[in-house]
Length: 187
Image (cartoon, rainbow, N blue to C red; front, side, top):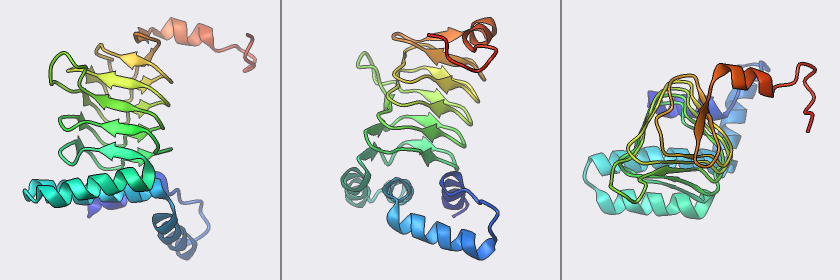
């Protein structure tokens, strides 16, 4: 139950308007937001999968797809605080291991690379930006950020940024030079 509350807190932010307003906000968003429903269905399908009630687990996985366009395998191990920022097109494989506080945008795929059946192991507070693919038996460290549309086939150290196709890890100097000092993008 603690995991479910961590997931909800990760997707429904307390805006400081009081406890009753926050509770009402949580209830409404759980009822109305498909991305939150998909996470709750994943958690329930995981329980059924662990209890070896595979037909029920796979039924809930199918409902995730219908409701929110998400396919998270019930055998995936994902820590508390899972946040689907935008849910459509998210696919997470059966042997994936993800730590706490995973933030996932639309169009993300996390799974095997087709060469073998190994899948990624990811640390805490990883951000997977829109359209990225994280594939194969690789390791993604705590706090890593995967850039939009990146195809990650290599390990990404903790607190680093991976971008490109195929992805490369940006070093600190590259990241600093890529941000203009006045905050304006100079294309």
